[in-house]
Image (cartoon, rainbow, N blue to C red; front, side, top):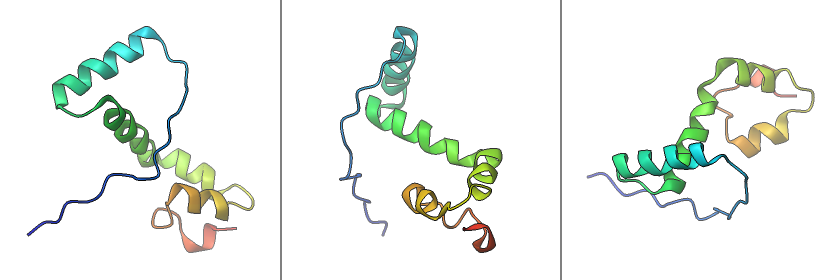
Length: 83
């Protein structure tokens, strides 16, 4: 049996300015996937954590411990790279 994971209860409303084209892409993709627009944007942004160069940049920052904890990427960063 697989249990249902709770949705992120820490979600906050964000006021960003994005182009009409980007909004239409998200809206159409949400309709296609049958997810909400917020869920589509959230999943897309989480995919940024698959960028190895971004993770490397975080590893090489001084005092990166807080950022690693905020992004919840401890498993992606080598223990020796946490400063």
